[in-house]
Length: 315
Length: 138
Image (cartoon, rainbow over the protein chains, first blue to last red):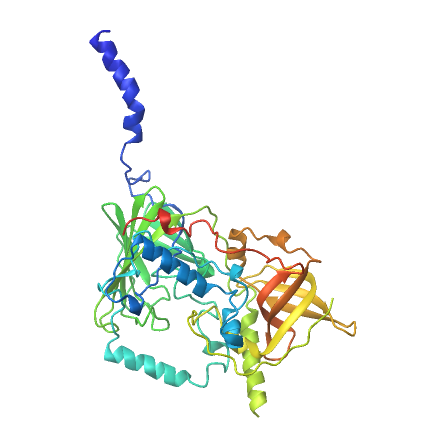
């Protein structure tokens, strides 16, 4: 066998191995941007904040993670009948109506909050605490006066986990990302929100223009999409944030089926320091299903009718 | 088929260890002091956002039929778990344990909804994508 033939045989023999071992690289769109497109889920039972009883434990061991998952599954189980009638009412229907997930994040972190390192959202500033207290005082006793007094979620206006920033909830934890030249679109299943994020370098809206979802601007940094959102209103709040919130989100592909989503909350008038969280997103089979929240929002009339019945019973 | 009359339960234990939030204030809409157990025939399953509603006819001991509506979950979540309109056809006989609306209307939330033979309508938590095993190392 001559050397040439030997070389060919070796190449033919090793080629599939070399191909199989080719490192995964971030896929790119036709215009060369990291390709984030697809349908993704961020469901997890890892809590936003570290449970207090875990102290400074930032990561579960494998065994501890299994134990925690078991504990949360049992706690979330709406088919439990302990706790009495009030617990049953609040559990509200069978477990199969929920989609809360069963797994902690693969890193086995004990909280989605990664900064500060204690895994907890920093304290509110004194002025933010006062603002919250004033609002609560103004609402007290009037929560069921009419639909405008009810929570934004019940009114199907916005959902605090639908974003920005986007957080797992007890169902509809699904997102579709579509990219085009100069734009990224994120379709959020919860309350069928759509975020259209310009990536063409245009400036933010003027400061006096305030929007429920703020005003997002994206830019590409290496393999990541970085989105800065400002121009929030004071009508909604993310964990105590106010209209001065500057939110930075980062989307980065970490594998064929995964995105690592990170966000940083920077709002010095609301929080005593900035804080950050990381949430993995896993590819799922689509499609996103429309969640036209107010379509059959019988609960609104039901709650108000309940409040009127309560008032009559006290007369 | 029979309807079981509502029982009065006093002194409900305090809720502990459960999510303090849900899509809406169930405790304001439904009355913990009006537990219900109904056996009836499904007349319609309203697959509607944000939450589905099961309509069923319940025949009382006197033969009188009363129509009830029982609140259910988000159609999206149900669909992903393989639960379709065909999963609860009209005419299905189901048993609902739950709580009646505070205003006394024949609406309720079903804390336990099963077929007449005891089978659960569906078993939960098998949604694609929820398995964090595929997630990256943070």
